[in-house]
Structure formats: structure tokens, C-alpha cells
Image 1 (cartoon, rainbow, N blue to C red):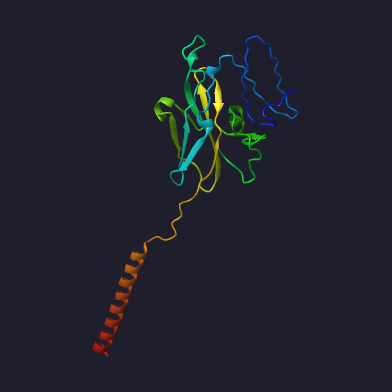
Image 2 (cartoon, helix red, strand yellow):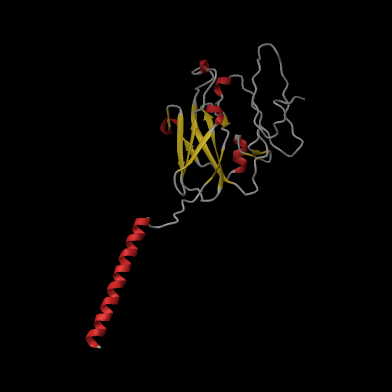
Length: 223
């Protein structure tokens, strides 16, 4: 039994080995009631590799809008593009989003979020989200290697987990590292500026003075 990179329970693990003259036996098992996916691929250039180590960037654009960005997936070695194995490159990106509970905490530096709720693998995102949010065509929303999309239905004052899955033209899927964001209200605590409030005070004071003067003139006239 081998442990790759130490204890990586619930974490996607990738490693490359030469198949030139050696046979290998792979076994994936779990002591718990879990599901695992094992992919063995000879043409490594067909598998999408998330750009910039899978980083996902987020920025709140409004009370109900969040902008997500990520760098395009790459393929190594590039010499396999256009080979007899089929077309290479990214067919689309799938965006996932899910609200988090207050009790949802990240328990490991290598697992996002935890082994029972994995959000940085394709199968984990499918099992822990209701449905995919968007399917993005890279030719329309990606420019100079960077992609951006806006989600306009998030609820304020909630924590969300967002992630991106790259789907290659050969059908292989790779998830990015993911992002946790808390959406905030834009609270306006003062409806008017200080100068406006001062002007209102001056006008109100002047009007009150005029009312008092008119009152005394009426008393003098009819008294």
C-alpha cells in the first residue's frame, strides 16, 4: 500500500509514471462507504490542467451579483494536439455554486472542504450541489487566457462556495481549487449628505420664524 503526498483523504491526487517497459497494478479502496474515480490515461496531453494552480478569483459586483474569474486550462505536452487520439483543447467550462451552512468548515489544507463534502473534484461537485450554474464556451467569455462570468442570483449575507470544471474535447474533466465568498449588503446609513441636512435645517428654521411673525401680526390686527 502506498500513500501519495502523505495523508490526502478526500483530495484529488495526480501522478505520472512511464509505461515504457514496466507493468503496474493499481488498487483504490476505502474503509468508509465512499465512491472513488480512477482514471488511467496514456495520452496525458488530453487531460485539462487548471491554469494558475486552479485559482478562482471572486469579486462582488452588487447586492446580488458576484463576478468569478479563472485562468484557462492548459494541456501538456502540447505536441499531442491534433494527434490520432482525437481533438485537444477545452470544450467548455462548468460553473458550480452552493450556499454553505454556518457549521461548514474547511478541516484540511489539502481537502476542500472536507472528506465528507468534497468541492474540488467533478464528482464531488455533482454530489454536493443541486445543479450546475452555467456552461461557458471559452471562445466567447475567455480573452488572453483569462475567463470571467457574472452570477446574479446570490443571496446577501450568505457564504457560498464557487468552483469551475474544465471539460476537454475528449470528455475529460478537471476541477479548479475553488473559492469561498461571503456576500455583503451595501448599507446606506445616512440618506442625505451633511450639506443637504444643513440646508434643510436652515429652510425649516426660516419657515418656523415666518409662521411666528405672522401669528403676532394677526393678534395685533384683530386683538
